[in-house]
Image 1 (tube, helix red, strand yellow):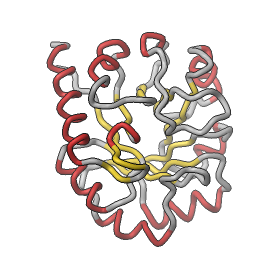
Image 2 (cartoon, helix red, strand yellow):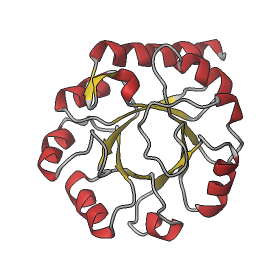
Image 3 (cartoon, one colour):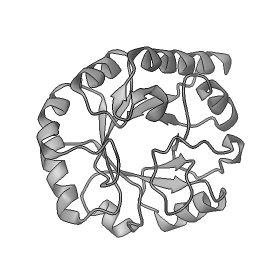
Length: 211
């Protein structure tokens, strides 16, 4: 059975981090984009980092940052992966010596994903989100999951996912991973334990149905 990986994004509380790890989530996303309600500050990082279990990937998310900001987060958080949501170019994204995920705005159509594949040859994976080009991610906007084009690299599916629709999304898109933030929250940055559990359960159910 192929297993869909799970990434919980926008975590801001150590308790939510610990629960995510207990639920077997593969990766945790920490947000450093300036306009995000889930943005973390340096004083938050030690407690969050200490709550992460071994073998769980840590993803640091940026949108059009300066290089010194990325380097500072890398020193403090020691992430496994970087994730870029802005107009950063391939050279900038790979300049930090860590693998990176490039976000693609799917609100304008699947052509944007094909273009991103050419613009970011160094990307480890692509994250397809439902927002329009030029808008920040994390808005909880779905897109037509049947329009995911073959990109030749792992695809993270994001945008409007929640426990009620993630199974359908997996069946339509067959992604490498699913990425959820607002769909498991009671408020921005505050995860809901019951929704977290339900999301993990529904991903496992969808994977079983693909056998």
